[in-house]
Length: 223
Image (tube, rainbow, N blue to C red; front, side, top):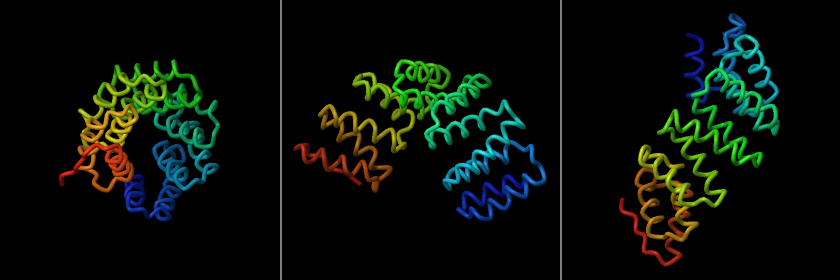
């Protein structure tokens, strides 16, 4: 109950009150891994990395098979440039829950950041096999393929993502960016217009609209 109220306070951006609730709950139930991970995430967002790490480690000690804790601790370690330690956390989480799409996404992104592109691709493909419509896996795999200049394959991943999640601004932006990079201006225009229907004030979509028009393509937005 206390955890739910703390989450409500976080959603309301009442972080100080939320912290009080988390601390009170942990004082009563120090082995509650759900409280630990939620509090750790709050502290991480506030850039209180050391305190966040303490919460994640305490949670993992109490519940070592909690894949959500492993994922969030891994993300914190990536944020603080401790990439080798982050890899261990993602691997530990996947050992418990191999079909966890979030863990696959984060681990694949990390491997790409480390320049281990083939391993990153394997993580994304494994994740997509279990979660074929997951927008985060499709997005990150598409980004990796674009970075490797495998443009047709990247476009295929982004289009799969957009087909399943037409309102997702990140997928729309990534597909439009890829089309623009290949100078496919009419197709880029079509994608930008589709994205702007749902997100008319999005900075990146509007910047791409200007680029398309500057390239001589008559791209009018209705709406």
